[in-house]
Length: 214
Image (cartoon, rainbow, N blue to C red; front, side, top):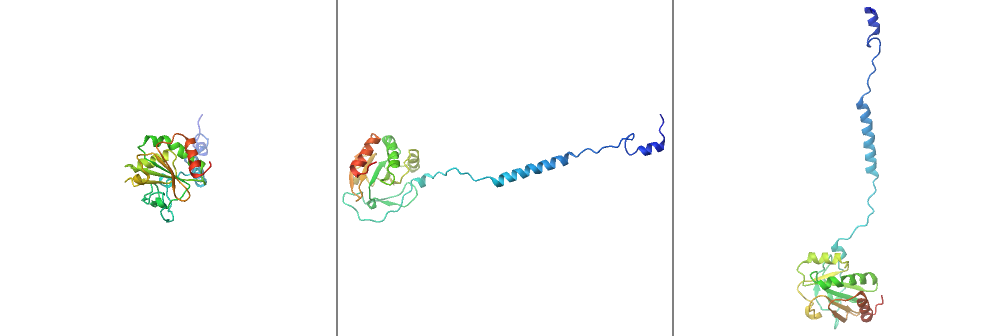
């Protein structure tokens, strides 16, 4: 079949009379998708809630000391010496302290101190509001290890540092551990030398020597 030139012109611009369909642009499909994804991402970031997980105190804060009002020394009381705090806080003058108070002399290199640590940690929990606890890190050259020891064993009450053995003579410290019981007048009413053997023993000493019933 022969097609004349005029016939061809009427069929143009398509091919053999069929009009060419434009192909949809891939770019037009991709850009809106990216825009939607970006919008969702920004929305998620903008509405994210801050974490409600509880914050953990730094070791220095957990072992912090507080300033005590100055008081006159007490006969048979704690020695009149000032010691630096293992955690945050000021130096503490032992003669200013009043009870009921349990003072535990310890060191991170002391095996028996590690054995009795759980009893002291438990006493702290049970005696809240009834009794105070104080630790004295004794003759210990590694302050950072002492901080770690206290944290690992749950001894999160104030601790002092006695690197020069200032309490050795007044409390007759042969070596740690040693636990002193101080009444409300500031008198040292009893000193337990050596390791505490059980929770029951410690609780009984608190009751007998300080009159605090747990």
